[in-house]
Length: 513
Image 1 (cartoon, one colour):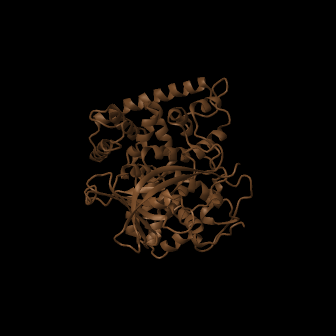
Image 2: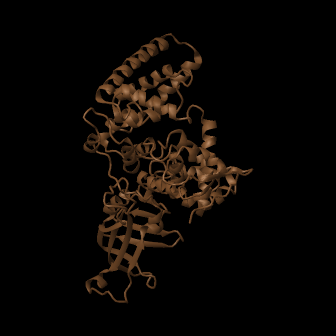
Image 3: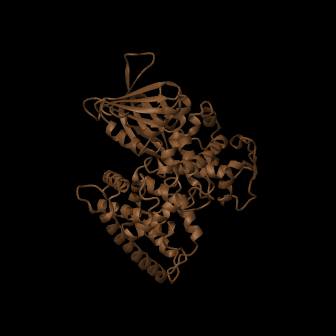
């Protein structure tokens, strides 16, 4: 694999940006500000969704020094790696293009840059596109407390070095329709399904190819099935779907049981507020909302024991919006429910997975583990519950979520990749938890406030990196037995030995040097 490539690109440039001199508190000096983006590519084929995140470096030089082309000592210049800062704040004057940029370091040092001649609008666009920072919206009820005159961006701490990325990071591009079709033989069977899963795991699927690829990832179609066999499968499942619909219509028209009626009312309420900001579900009288409702009602008849549980609408919604086929969407959803233990038996399933996650935190994020160990309440990892229940649905915007879900459903390397995604979220977005020593309740609030502002590319890069790091261990605690047995990361090497003690979560592991 080719070594990391780095490309510098100027993404922002503005003259007459002012800085106040330390020794002259009443003196403002005009200067030229540039912000350069450095893109790191792990290989020649790396595409944006799988690329490690870019860094931004700000450089300010006085106009006088710039004009004289002075490159020797003397004169004040200012250079800072924005990725190593704590936060960036934009304060606006009445004219929204003018104001100040306040750069805060993690040591609580501040640098104020003044923009008396505009430029903040363009700077805002740069920050909003930068995956290493997320805009802080504010606490409920206080979103408008600054009356729109301030925007705050929190810089996420990136813990991985080049060596800690997965060795295959950046070797693949997103799976496009032409590539997908090239994997089919003359009868329509998909060749080399393991390579398909590998591509999806590392790079994802193009929007246009998702309706074709997802039915295979969810198991509706077999990869080795021919076109004719898939047509037979579809017609058979369509007839079964119609029978479920008829049963649902008959059942609901005759059912007067209070408990069932209560479940149905909950379903109706959930559907009406699920993803209504998405273009696919927005607007009054949208038929897609009614379709979502009917599919969930069908499921209550299909699986009477489980019926409807809060959260199902969140999981079915993206599937329907991508596939846009009632029959395939319904059966892919049923496959997802078979794989998911979290909605059917949430307490037992989450408890088992939290045991494994705590071990992974202890091994791969020891500093965070030590903070958790200060409180038994913190060790409950309450902030992770929603992540597992909804497969991170509330943590990412729609586009990022689809890429993350594809990585999960690919089944490449491990069936427990959700644990590494959770680990990566903690590693990327948990820096302030450590620095501010947040207790359990504030920890929950901290991660909740990150909702919809997380970057899937950043998280997935870290998650795959953590997965690779785990593969270097010779000994692992027995509490990770399920993960070890159901993972393929040791296929080319000897599986680690499992060791136990009275407290399995505190078993020590030895790292291969």
